[in-house]
Amino acid sequence: MNTKLTLVMEDEVIYKAKSYAQKKGTSLSSLIENYLKTVANDEKPNKDANLLKHTQLHPKVAKLKGVLNLPAHFNYKDEITKALVQKRNKLK
Image (cartoon, rainbow, N blue to C red; front, side):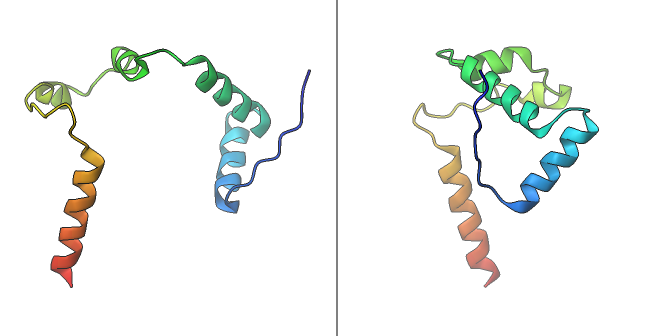
């Protein structure tokens, strides 16, 4: 059974998504449905580790793997935010 779903998003996102779907020879509905199926079926406990197993790293990146040891509680997003704020303050 198919059910209608209404989504609200930016016009530019919709335009680009429709263009992408057309290039791939599919509909936007099919594209979104397939994406949601993938997300819904990927409820494995350690999906990031599984993703890395199936993703090949560029050789230059592979050489760097394991070079840096960070604490378990390290939050890289916070660190990036701090660095960007510092950079912005220096530019003022």
